[in-house]
Length: 220
Image (tube, rainbow, N blue to C red; front, side, top):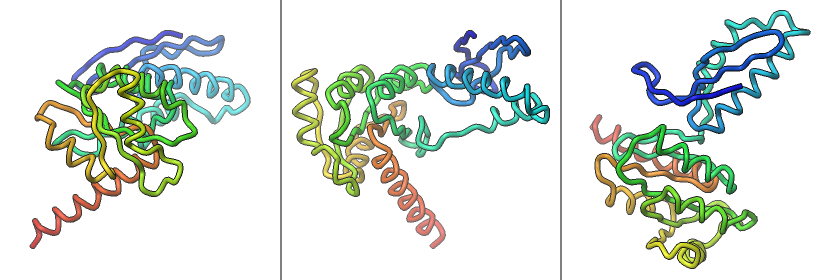
């Protein structure tokens, strides 16, 4: 198994993998999801399907390629707003946050990244904050309103400043956090909401409501 990062006109920045098994060779297949870790996940999925093909002759490569091309995972490096650009990712542990911060720079070009972060109290919070500081140029801490186990944003701010000494701020909810981020973002900046799928869900719901309001205004 091997993987490489590449850029082309059709797919933009993406990974390609090569996987050789005793029965098949899958060469230079584009990985449908961004991030180095998704290349590994794709290879594991291909290896599992290759094993199943030994007992399920109906599994053909054309279906496999079609399935790969159509693979999407909501809430994983998902672009949900275009101006300013807003990406959501439900990374909720240190490994996932680290993979997100590494993947952002290569797959989504930007000048500066504003991270909106909130997480639950049962997580390895300090390690997540250390990884967050690697990629985030500006950090806004908030909490999902429907999650009783969410860490208080002021507590996140204190712990983050103890760890990194980096300037950060808080917002009482995702609506306020997005307003702060949008006011600070330039055209080539990126806003990333992460730390919790609860927070991702509230972000998407808020932006969908905002878009509906804009549509109604445009139609009136």
